Length: 141
Image (tube, rainbow, N blue to C red; front, side, top):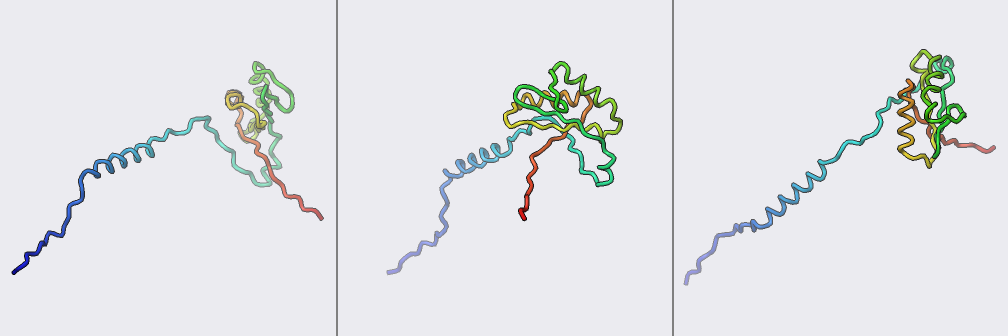
């Protein structure tokens, strides 16, 4: 008796799963591609200067922010007087490097307050720069 061989070794995969895989891939790429750009205030960070240029630089204006208000060079300023007072201080400075305003803020300063004050600094003609915490290593003898 002769046996017949079945040579159909190719098995077709089930086509039900391909629609699910395609849908999952589409959702994955849409989620990854739908990021919105960060919004905020555009700032030009000043570059570091060499030692010779730092000697010629005048003292920068310092604005200190806290939860309730702002101070210019240590003197509290009302929001109405902030821009005129800052304009008077910046009017004596001619070079753009001298118009840098250092902004120091406490940890509990609200973001909307920081944005409002930096907007007033821009309006007065100042260039905003941030004072970050500096870490120093002290070597004991």
